[in-house]
Length: 325
Image 1 (tube, rainbow, N blue to C red):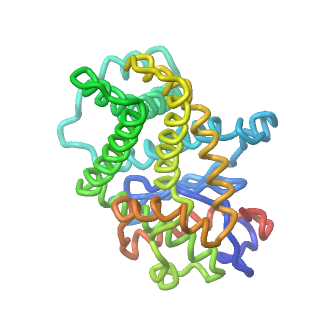
Image 2 (image 1 turned 90 degrees about the vertical axis):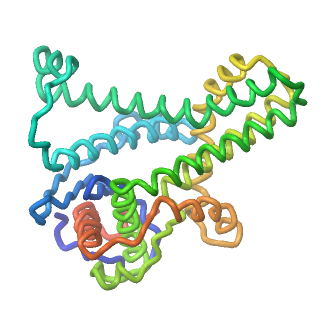
């Protein structure tokens, strides 16, 4: 825990500290440390704190604008999966233990526990990215391409339909998840994470009472980032496919994949720019992402807020203001 660090900022400012909701817990990422705090079934807190080495510190070139977006996104995914696996380890096991899978037996036999965990994280991140790409990028193109087999679609209409289907699938996915009992609790922790960050940014001491009164919608949320990724993909593909008419469905899907790193990079830089200011324009462009948080954040109880406060406090830098956005 940082020495002499106050659990509030003396002068309100936007912090670069961000987090992720987990299974009965929260991960917070600060400029120097990563902390995972989980509420165990017994009621006490489990804590895991690690020093952070940023990508730009190890490889300065990867910290340059329009390069850092993709690498930071992948790094965030890896950190999120590791934290999720840690939080899942506290879930009570079933009375009848399950037989280890072939993959688990192979990993236990050929790799150390640390290397096996690294392999599992890599596989989980890869599968997570593939799932998102297939569901939100490729599936809309395939569905509209299927419609195009039965009727002639002008290029502008095809681009429009792909965009509409992409947004509908994304929103439907969020709404479906929000109605699942276990995911609903994760989204309550998501609300606790946002409230804690808001409380700190407003210069208030991090107490349960102060955090509870804060809004649960935050403009720099990951939900907003994903929504902007989809919007940027719609705009970029509409522009490109307006000049280069590609009607073959599989070729269009391939071009979408090639554009993905550019889309993530543009979105990352856009979010950094918007997150730095608070005016009518930034509030306008943040509004759709804030609205979507109605399905990804819910009001937490006090025990969840305590987890958020503890995780946030653990990553506060020793130097006041070093976490400024």
